[in-house]
Length: 329
Image 1 (tube, rainbow, N blue to C red):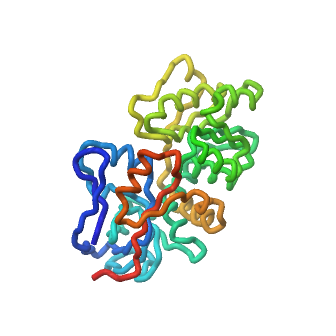
Image 2: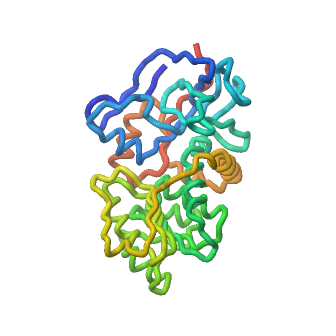
Image 3: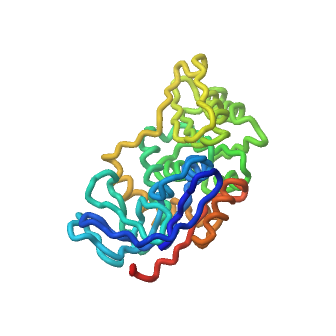
C-alpha cells in the first residue's frame, strides 16, 4: 500500500510503499476513498518544516470503508461501513477505537452525506465546538478574521444556529466571494479596505462583540492585531489560528478590558457536536460542494501540496482520491 510521507528537507512530500498494517483486537482497518488536506497544519506544520515528519501525523481527515474489525472493538462497526476517521493520508489506516483519546475516533456516515462531505467531519465538529464556546447571542456582531477552511467552517457553524450579524474578513477574492455565497452579512476584503475602520463603521464606532482569529501562518500577527483593534471593550477575541512565524502581538494598552481566549474545546461535548456536524453536512448547511476547489489522485499528492503552498489564491479545499474499491490483501 501507499502512504504519504514528509522526508527531511522542506517543501516535499513523497509516497512510501509499505505493507498493509495489521490490527490489534481493539482496532479497525479502513481502506481509504478520499482525504482532505488541512492547509494550516499540513503546510505550515508539516510541508514547510526542515525535519522529517512521522507519516502518522500526515493528515487527519479521511473517509473510507472498514475492511476488518478487531474482535474486541467497542461500538457498532461492521465490515463495509463507510466511515469518516481522524486518520492520515494512506491507502489503508488503522484506527484505535477503545482508548478514549478521541470521542468518537470515527463515525459511520449516513447515505445522505457524501464521502467528500465526510472528510469535513473533523474540522466541522471542531467548528461547532468552537462556536458553542463563545456563547453568541442573536444581537451580537461576530467578525471572522480569515476565511480558509477553519474560518469558513466556523462561520457556517454559527450561521446554522444563530441570527447574529456575521462579518467575514479575508484578503483573497475567492474566499471573499465564497463567504458572500455562504451568507455572511458583510464581507470585507482587506486588500481593498481597512477591516478595523470597516467594522467600527458597521457598529457606530463601538466595535465587534466577538472576533474569531482564524488566520495563522505568516499573515497571522497582523490579522490578530486587527482582531484586537476591531473588538469592543468587553468583547472577546477567540484565537484559533496557529503556526505563525512570530509571536502574536499583545499590546497591554489595547487588550485592557477585552477577553482573549484560546480555541478550547470541551472533549466531553464532542460526541454531541459530532452528531450536529453530521446533521449539518446532510442538510447542506456546511456547503462542501462550494468549498472544494481541487481534486487530485493520491499519486499526484506532491502537486497538491505545491498548489496549496504556492498558489493559495486559487484554492480552498483540496482532496486526495484513493479509490477504495478493493479489499485489503
